[in-house]
Image (cartoon, rainbow over all chains, first blue to last red; front, side, top):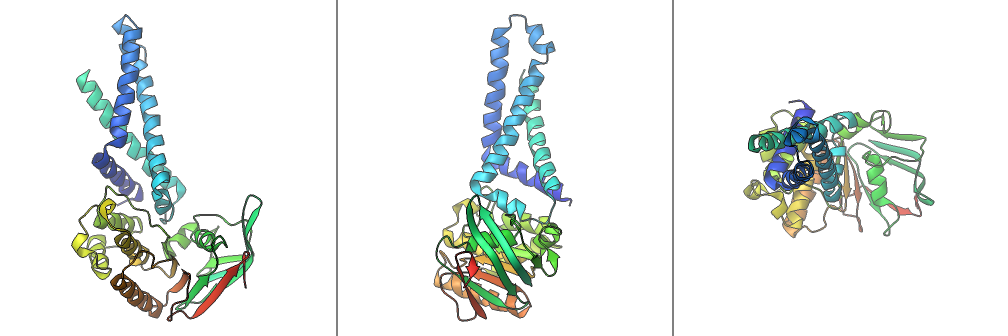
Length: 113
Length: 207
């Protein structure tokens, strides 16, 4: 398996077992959407103005930050840096891992909207 | 083989390593002793490419330069830090499997089980590593450090938190690794009997 795929698999496994990032990001996404929904009286504005995408972008940023911070705090970033892969592959693995989780969150949000 | 010549590392104004020269041959165990804050851990982190040195004339692992061939160097190094980090959401087996897969080790599943059996963790291999005691964490760290057959082993106080059985297992494995031709640089407060040489680090240099 490609190192990037192994990293993505690991990120998903760790996240689904702890749910820390998913829950925090879901709350953030919910708060942004609710704020917009109550601020704008016309619901069409919420749906068509890109507010949804802005909330997704912000949630995605919080996800990447969460994963990086968690690795730094636990020292697991050192474990990753000891692996014989380039920093570029490491970055891509983490980024795609976060993106996968974000898409799961988006799909769940869309389903319930 | 580890070869360092005129190796420098500083943190801001504090010069931690000054013109350090070290040579560890293949199949040799060298113990590095020294007081707290003399740069022992910094040296291991620099060799393992976790930290970058300020300057050096020669810094090679098996003739591979630390900066120019960092990925090759990392694939040849096994590093056991003072507090080995793991993912607490993964089991001991999964943590080791992740490491082996990232190191492109073939037949990683069975190798991971074999390594866990060697360090005496097979009965708890499917427990989350977050529930491990400090001795178990140290054993898992050692298993990870040697699992991909490194040619150079860097150990930072490897016997911390280990019971007598754990120390015995680790010493036995260390002797075997040495016989296989691995260079071992061990940071400890006292020099074990099986160590070939002892170096004292003082004020950033070997005294």
